[in-house]
Figure (cartoon, rainbow, N blue to C red):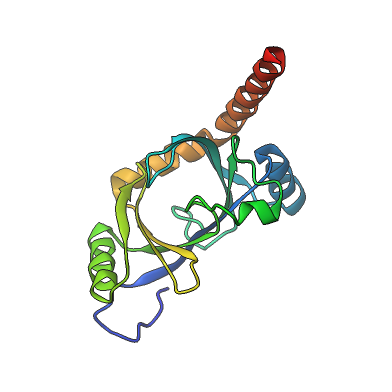
Length: 192
């Protein structure tokens, strides 16, 4: 189902893709959302560069399936554990947002519609980043007047397959992240 647009020339939007937030600890977050709330872990992506700035930063981006009625592209609540900037104090978290923090992503039909949104937004004076190729989708990013980061995202068949492949290894990626973080913490403790 799509929203009936005010302007019939605007490309359709298909609802929430994901809403993303920072977390203190990915495993603690997984336990709460998966084991307590019951949302299955769908993706766990270890990323070592900021997707829009290229800045080196290690983080785990985890997604939990909150359902959408579309088995190929469900809606998610997502979190980032950024190890060098854990954001364990909410007041500190909001002093420097990374762009990945607190963003709202909406799905569009395809890359052509993504480009149409970019042209439309820029034509209205909105600064737009992207499209950024995430391998399993492409996205454009922009901000609302309050400073909230918004995203339009699209995936075509090749990217949908990458998405499904990543879903199949989410549990393994989560285990690798926990081991990597434990080894990193151990090495830091031994160095002191």
